[in-house]
Length: 111
Image (cartoon, rainbow, N blue to C red; front, side, top):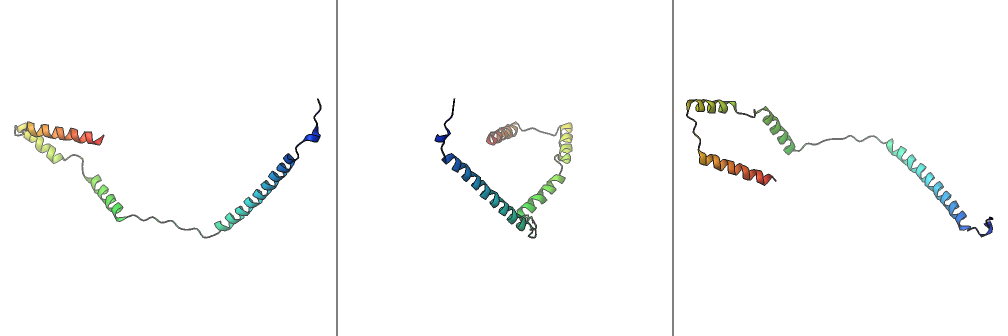
């Protein structure tokens, strides 16, 4: 089977030529931008600086203070243990129920 090459679209050849020309222009533009990048890197480097606000400094100071406070007041624990042992520790059921209900309501608000 023979192919008739006389009917070949010549615009395809010109499109290939244009694509090659566009690639050459892009390549030369890329080389120019690389030269500009090299020139800009020769400028003196800028120094970085950090500024901490007064609020951040206060927060950091407060966190440091809280880290030194024990989570459990051992004096209070010993006082309650002694009161229980001596029979002086009284539980108010109304107050206990109120505190439990309040705690549960606060937990609901977290969700």
